[in-house]
Image (cartoon, rainbow, N blue to C red; front, side, top):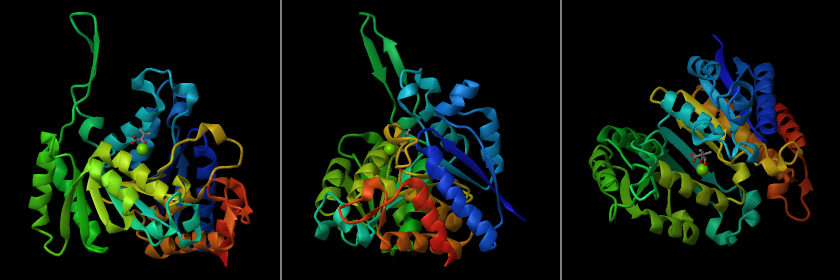
Length: 359
Ligand code: IPM
Ligand code: MG
């Protein structure tokens, strides 16, 4: 039976990069016996423009009935002044929470071909391979109460709530330990347990769950130190697990170690291997529509989809190898280009990956 993928390009460069990932899926359907059906939906600012909501009912229904979701990016200058309740980002957050995609896997891998593109010294980053496991449906992003209220003296006060139940920490802990078991069996849990009670509980639960995984070496680090260590000596990390907001920040930091945020995919999983796959970068409205964006993060997100939701490790590896091939051919979009490389646009990069798949 064919599997169904909801394709949600979103805004800005989301449209161009998803088009390249769809080319890859089309090629796998035609030449490699993948059997997926794709259906498009609106999300983010473009959805708001057309329907008045960044997450229309039809899109949510499509996402719910699909086996996996491929998402581009949401947001742009045009929608920045909208009320927070209908901003493009709400489309993305709504999908995460409605589909209960609580486990966000963000690998930061340095391709040797791009070692010189990092802003850090080559010896600090070469061979880098970190997996950040970010809790995605709880914490301060979703905690109640939240809002902006007016105090008695007419002064406004903004407030959000950092909140985690034991069960929410436990389930992300299991994902993190399982992930570590398949890698080097080292897990660093990042918190701010010296200041925030909520993450004191986080640490306590991590230690408790860790007893079920005696082979995994569990360590703990405060988030400020973790940010520093990521740029000082990033190779000390194997798997990192952290809260929604700390994970948001640390994953951007880790991404930059690899030279370009344009290379990094992500998977957001529910408890049944259903997932939403997207590049970790944003919609980059400044370069949208100019055939400049790097489609490789989205194409690598397709590889993650093949691996985690479509049960096709073979094809996942094939896609990853095709990406290696185009890098070996010295093809580079602007974000990873240095003198002497062969500069290509979004379309040409997508075509090159498809060509590499076919050989
Ligand atoms: C990310 C993004 C999102 C987040 C935004 C677009 C809501 O930064 O996926 O990291 O904060 O989670
Ligand atoms: Mg982010």
